[in-house]
Image 1 (cartoon, rainbow, N blue to C red):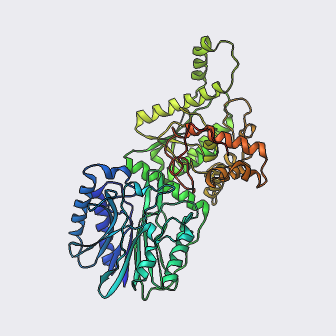
Image 2 (spheres, rainbow, N blue to C red):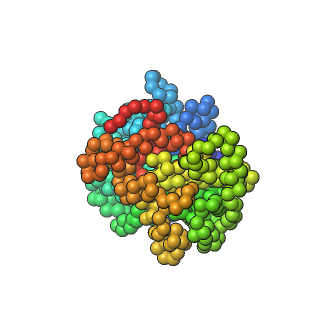
Image 3 (cartoon, one colour):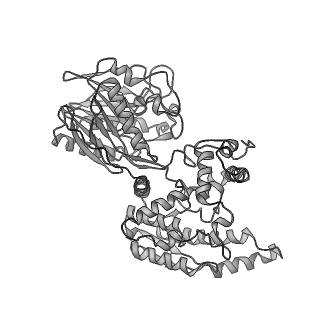
Length: 543
């Protein structure tokens, strides 16, 4: 069998556009000699559609698009993911489904059996699971069709969730091939985990596995592709690239073994952020982006990602010095924009800052200056940037990192203003790692920006470490508390200072209200703020 894998970038709810993408990929596979073409989970719909499925015309229009797509398919079958009704009996109103299209008809419909409802997934809110796993008989072959979670075994899940193993059930029916239509979102290290999973499944059941994964950004989730095919004895027969659309045809009987692609964590993070930003901007219909450039590493990395994702002509930076801004920060911002070729304007805020303080003098009286005046500067900058965004139609990017967002080292209605938080799931230590990767061949981000101590520059001689621990220490504690859900006592037992752990724990908990007002951020770790982490604001639990 020669199996075509179409790794496409679907847009949620764009049925006409997704049909065109599917037909183009199908025809490309036909030209390469495919006998069967496999596409990702919900490739007709875009994943995840969330509550769009409840709209009265969403599923009917999906089914109309499926009928239209079927009319484009000839004797070579196409497997496509979509959403169907669940009409019979009790249960949820919809099915996460796959359709086998052939000779202008829908020959088979397959229901997803295992519905993930944890982390970023919420499928039991919408879908009724399939009850029977039946192979498809085709050209003398028995094909087992699974959808994403159906192929994930207990060894690769956070914990045992299910009483069924669809892949094993199908293997027990003497299948010749197992295919999986997937929409598996990226986080750091996920591609290697998937490759190990698919290899284990193939070897355990003694059947080749073809795995077609989505690619592209949809809201906060980034899908990295990395589709693959594995022989019955675990040889890697095909490995599609990450973070881009791709089509290939693999010969399961004669295909030779290919090398697993080399991985670089910094490169994967960078490519995920570029893809997530590009798709968020273009799929939402913006013409470009704008951002504040402080001379610091966070805004510098965000600008590099934006220029790569959208082209330098579509990125507009503002540097907004105050009386506390060092000349080096302004110079570094200008040097960065010259290297990237993006537009940068300088708009000082000092006069506005003095004007706001003077206006509030009758209210504040003789109270000493404190964090209030620091936040004024951030909010003035937010005003300038939002004004630029309104006037130009560009999407404003926020530039805060995960470490600062975790402990509230950010100003609500100030530097948190914006429509997308590009690096909000990137801990500060990873910001440095990715920035050094950006400079691996030549200086793009000024080395002075990378090497200097980070500072918000909102008061004289301010440094982040005046109020925060070293970022390697902070990030290690945050990983335990936020991503691993460890208690303060468990983190202290790892060797961290008790007073520091409890201070960080308190800061994380107290600043939940800020994070719930933050712009959506691109998820690249196992636990991003916002999607996949749902904490109450009003609560008194300490642990």
